[in-house]
Image (spheres, rainbow, N blue to C red):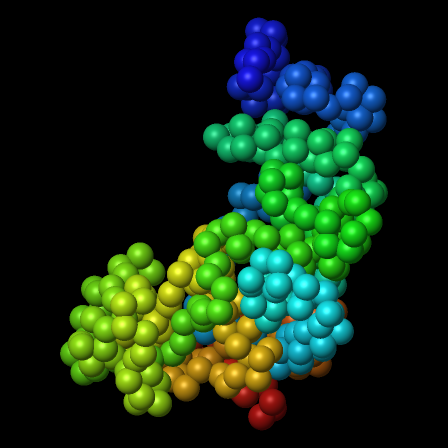
Length: 395
């Protein structure tokens, strides 16, 4: 492959953080040169980058640190709630024929594909609203050490537009550039998106079949093994050493069984030589899981164990499975989205400005919770948990 050599001016613009409108345009010009060298037409570059202005709220979103770290029980409660389970069952039935074809082609469990869709965009309801080109252009020129990464994603977006797979007006998503029903990054789209509905385009935004097939292709390429589970809840023996746990610390299932690990109902582990790890997302006092290779495939979609567990558990619930048998080690459990809306509505009735109750916990809600906790003599944490909801319901 011929190596492209960029002009010195372009290299300078790509390596410097612009501080003015002129330097932002210089940075975009350099990226346009790279995109042109990668095969993007001058008309697409001009149309998409010409006169573009940065959106500095994207940088704010990137730099924003959460006021408190979300405990795993809050994370799971908000993502695997009754509403998302019920909606997932409906989607599994509605797109049954599509998902059956996807399973035949890629070998991936349909419920897992639907669960990814549910977690990533709430089944298409929350795909994001930020124009990708503007967000990625801003990040490409202002994101510090990550500029090179976002520049690559911006060029990938321009390639998508040139290919005509997705309507450019519908290329909106998260601040970081993920888009569509199952939130693909542009470079991932170029590598792994597929045409699921047979129209010759790979449209993960406006075609649910394309999004579901593309997600299954991603998981298959990430090592999904057909016909096997992601894992399941287990019971640990007394004195189990927590240091043995960890997603990458795999042993034959028989070795865990020999240590006294059983299924949650006490039945013996079965699978002999299948390699598995023990996961303790809340430490040894919380639920424990044995996880297999398919858990790693889910994990690859977004490298966080809590994320992978949410998708894995949601897929089980969509199939009719039960909640975890072991309670989370907390006296203040997390709230479902419906409960969070109820909490906000109760705060609004008390005169707090929390905006429209939507289940999304922002700074206004956190500050209101803190004030309520202070007034009621509760620990002042701002945590939107069952304790404060129960106290407000009591009046």
